Amino acid sequence: MVTVTLIAHDGKKADLVAWATFNRDLLAQCRLVATAGTARLLREKVGLEVEALRAGPDGGDIQVGARVVEGEVDAVIFLVDPMNKHPHEPDIEALLRLCNVHDIPLATNVATADCIMVWLAQRVDGTAEFG
Image 1 (cartoon, helix red, strand yellow):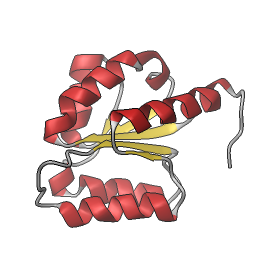
Image 2 (cartoon, one colour):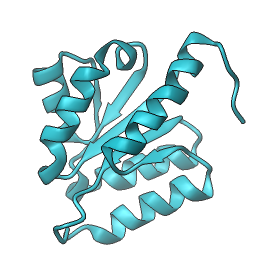
Image 3 (cartoon, one colour):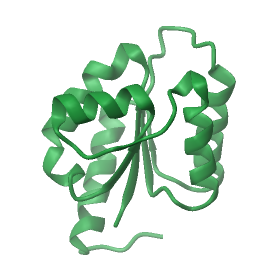
């Protein structure tokens, strides 16, 4: 089963809920992991089963990074709010770097999240193999 991690800054949580609602059927076929606040919203608003990690500022981004390093994540959707400063910015930068180092597909906005969904649909359907 494909594992997708979902994260959204507070200013992007509504965008993630809308995006996940549109992609609900495909996401429901995946193992989903999210930081605490995002997991709660995806459960309550979209009806998805999601494993919750800690909140981002409380170490959730680091927990995701550890799973990336261990090879337990197939893709990361992290809707970043580029207009606001975040106190845990070093954790966010570390996670983004780890995704790049370990060649994990990473979306930081809805447009790239849509691209990952095309890739994901092919993985879930078994119609294509990638790296």
